[in-house]
Image 1: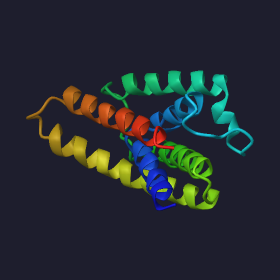
Image 2: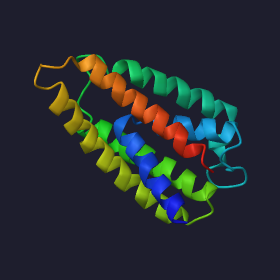
Image 3: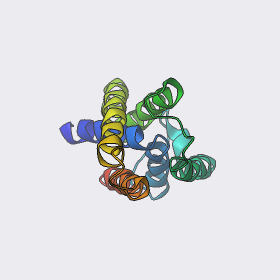
Length: 156
């Protein structure tokens, strides 16, 4: 039970780093049979259409994150998106792990908030000074979000 709670928190953290990576890896986890979501309120995440939509949106986000005019993740709309998608992803892991949906929602939201501010602080501490180029820093963050998310959903 504690491992599922931790997973729900950490998938929320993934959403804080890259909002759409969390639901995309949840869809992939359901596609590969790692997560059992069929017959649950979140069963739509196991649908191939959801897989394609979330994957495409996550790829678009990975590219747009590197653009200079992309707003900070702490501004209202990107922050709310991270919270909502962290909620969804945390709930999916809770349901797949057969624990309370409500606990998954709360932990996903907490993780998303933590991930948002941790990612923001990381980017500004490393590349904000101008000493380190932003692209390698952003790519490392991408790798952490994607790799961490896939690791989490493959443990069920």
